[in-house]
Image (cartoon, rainbow, N blue to C red):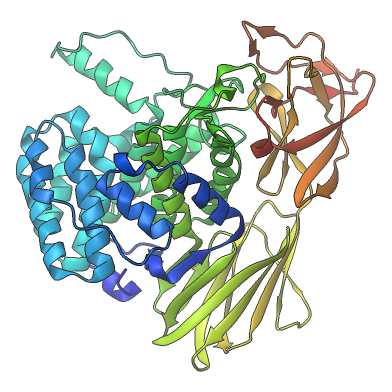
Length: 553
């Protein structure tokens, strides 16, 4: 990426954050494990050009794949723009990493071909690549200043459905069941139903959310800027699941904990959240990314394959618990998702301000005020992160650390000095003269907590981790209600939390056709039992959304 100042180019609105070059970030620990699991799904015989580039970058290999043939990819226009956009994104990554002017010219020429073909590209085909077109066009314009890219974005906005308006007046307030429609009919009603079916598909909904964030930087309008925030809030309210993602199986499915979020939708949400975070700077989006990554995404990977549909409550016998070999489209989605997370850890807010937005181990190598700086983040334990600095010479800059809102309290200590309390859910910013050996330690008090959900249900968390009652087999008991006044006690075993909760029997909580029904309401507390909850990511069959029982008469 260019420096922050050179990345800001009128008439586009300046983003809140600019990502660092891929070579500047190295990850370790939990995120490194997620990336490795995604790379393990790669089939070398079935990689797209973009998959190959992402796998190379995520694997931290030195040599990138060869430049894809963008002219050949453009031959699919106008009927199918996807092959071209996949190749163009790969080409842009290759060109920018190697500062290859010839490759950049090829990318620009491919985008000119796309611009010329746009009037003949149908709405459905255009929406399927709209997010990627905006990503490529906006980055290319910031890098090159080519004015035709502004024209492209203006035409794209005109041809796409009004996604900003959709999120402001959100039409999907319950589980979406598409209307049957004649695929060939061109009357207004048929076109409307086809459009709604597309927009109600979870992965496309996430792409539409990403488009709003980039439209806001393109237009500068408050309507577009507000659409992203309204969309995140509406999706959480009507389709949000305790694992962080919204439901989509594949259509938006409401908040019933037995409904699923598909792999494709989960991955598209992570990409969209990265776009929103960079555009708006809202650190709550970073927390949402972490919750999705450490629950819904992490649980997809199983020893014998992928469990692509993520349900909050399900039996071990449910078909979604059966792992399968990764399809090429699933590998592509996973690589894009973990790449988006990796790019969201460290970002720059100005030439002299660096921000750490996700609490993952690893290191960042960049320049502050022209001076090389290395920051290495190491987890001392589950709730303590220490950042060690190395600089070529003392340099003054601003370092901002996101203190997660799931912590009950937090402190920051610099070079072993007395720890100072800091506000959770905010950025803690320090401007000082940094030098080699400086150490910043973020210590968090992360106690288990309960969040209310669908129909007054309750879910238990420890930090970003959703906790669940494991149901390893058909004989495992599951009909329990949490005491609404439960005490939560925490233990650690092999680096993973266990949370003990008080519960009682809920014998009327039923299953039908092998599907656990929504949690009951209005239950009274009976004889108390202690349940031990494990991290959601470590379970297959499970209950992670419980009814609540009250002691009141």
